[in-house]
Image (cartoon, rainbow, N blue to C red):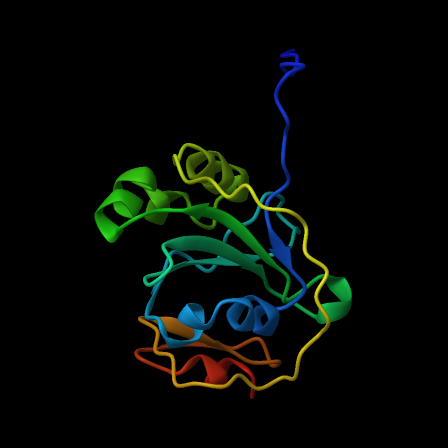
Length: 164
């Protein structure tokens, strides 16, 4: 068992109460393109699913927990900041084979922690914002999430379409 270095502070990743809070906390996120990095991240067979994505304009790799809000769905965790897509692909090499497997979420978090820009932010307590986002941001391969659990992939959909 490893012991923590007494002089080293272990920080929790930055978290947001909702995807709307995440986007509105930095306007660049609203207008940026995103790269989908998997929709089926999980640790346990019956554990919650997470979607991962990378925001081009900020370089942020984040997770959003899927499912009902009462069960923690919609919460966002900022994993790392990665300068460009090439570095992201190198950092997450093999993610397509891992995504959906047991403990894939832990694998993703470990990989993200290797980044020199691993998220080192505080827990944020932000008020819940409205369910519509301003702006006309676009995404690449952004899944459309619906209450009836059917998932379809649409290209170049505005962020605001997530909140139907």
